[in-house]
Length: 97
Ligand code: FES
Image (cartoon, rainbow, N blue to C red; front, side, top):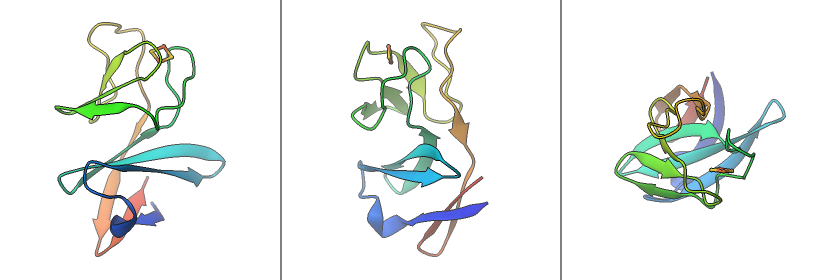
């Protein structure tokens, strides 16, 4: 796992895009729980950093597909799964696998 950001850089109910090995990853903070997802919608590639986060789901800003923050699945469109990454916290550090 790599240290990608500090928790203090991702405000509660906010997000931050980081680059890891040439890949853009969106970190999302929901009440202190950090999620990491690919910053690219699996539908038609929209950046996810303008997405809405609510009730454990992240909704793509382009066509509204809703993806689980924990496993990336989209109930309405099972053929589309958002890539998710394991997250660990170590003090103020966010590590992503
Ligand atoms: S590009 Fe994300 S739902 Fe279509």
